[in-house]
Image (tube, rainbow, N blue to C red; front, side):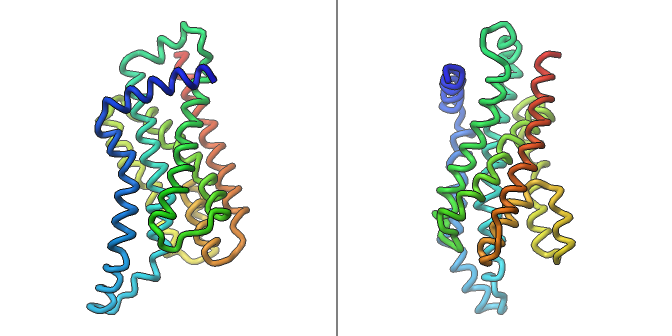
Length: 242
């Protein structure tokens, strides 16, 4: 816990110095507010003008902005911290301190996961469109939790600085497009897109909204993404020793 407190204080100082990171923290709430206020108005306008019923896609929109945007932003936030520490040789300095590298890596995995869960539990009800009750939303938020550290570790592995990190984050947006594509793919072929970890949380949300069994989907998505994070963490720790 002492390790977590030490790194947490350092992260808080870095966060207070960077206005872009502060904006990322409130960005999901800005999106949620826009959806809450404008989506019904846009739906009504499209229905009256061209006869297009946007309500058929509300579930897709809410699952995308409520469950998937948050771990990407949290991953970029933590990935930025990792890039800063890499640039400042902080990670190299850790090698000669009593702080266990495993504890540091565990902190970097758990922090985005916890923030992702809390973000989803707040933003989805805030959007207030097709929101699930807490007892259903919680397991889906936990299912999406490992997506945060996965994004962070991918950014830290593929980028050399913040500018490249932003470009990598945009590139990782393909993970967010998969659930959108899956929406239009009929079953059973849709399940093939489950090779992408972002599919499972969105699919669980769709099943829960339809009153169908979803816990097994949430559990599988959680375990599958955790396995990916474990591999990335091992590569990350190995890189510290090189």
